[in-house]
Length: 433
Ligand SMILES: Cc1ncc(COP(=O)(O)O)c(C=O)c1O
Image 1 (cartoon, rainbow, N blue to C red):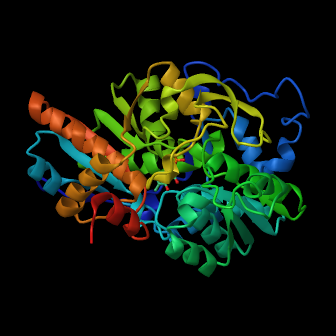
Image 2: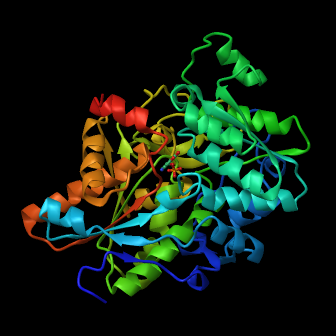
């Protein structure tokens, strides 16, 4: 291998054939979802809310779960495996002794890692006889990914999109529509719950928690429709582990291994997908890795309380034990709005509680984060999604710490998406003309 090799990819035949399920490896059993003290049982309703296969996976204690062959093939169609890059130019520009590596989920056809679970959920929904998928979206990346998954397997798709983002990402909305989806700003007047907020304020900025409630209500009213969630739940993180599993194989080819694993975190699917296969090495093989989740001060959910809370605003979901800011909290919209969620996935929350995961929250004006993304763009040539800019900022900040201390750390970060449809966000924050 040449010195300073810049990229490693896998042969398609080397793409993982199983997802990694961390549940049996956690330091203690994951606290199960529970019902609130009063009201109808949400737990009994779970089979009506989630796909049967996903519900099975949600509680499975099998460490490895097969990726169905047909789905594995669709992953190839979506451009997997994706390369791991060594950020040679960035290292030089920063003058850091650290070695920086980034995974390229931005090569996804819809723009982000969200396709890894969107394709799985669309695939299972088709098999289970549903005709339509209903969902929420924040950044719009998950809504696009599910619209794409639905189109590929031949299903309809309805997306409730947090209004604060819907308003400035018209091109992404059109992309979802090109895939055949129906897209509504949330809160909307399409659901009973949406109307209660929309009726009071037609410009309500919305939140992921609200959009989840709308997607769930929509699907509950139509026996041919099923609700799909883009983050937080165990099975979603598990589908995303294909990212970290590929990355581990690629590190072997680089003959290197990370000291630091960094990624941005909203509900936890990106961070979990990238980091959990490495957490395995820490828990089971005695490796020493520092994990850092990059967040916004607008929604630093990992700095909230570790307790049971609802995953949605209207309290339709069971309660999950997670780090939460409270399911009805107001959070200021940001350009990396995919990070603006009140709670963090139960798996990541447990690992944080046990001290395995650190977190940093960047200021809400996002200037530091977008400035760091600009440095990355100029050195490496790829345009990160606003959410992914948080991973980039954290990786660069750590690399600069290494410059001060002289440490030759190996830093791995995931660029969860591209920002081609997010330029207005860059324009506003960086003051571009
Ligand atoms: C590109 C991108 N990265 C990261 C995230 C964060 O979400 P999660 O933590 O659920 O992966 C989002 C959410 O929309 C996103 O669009």
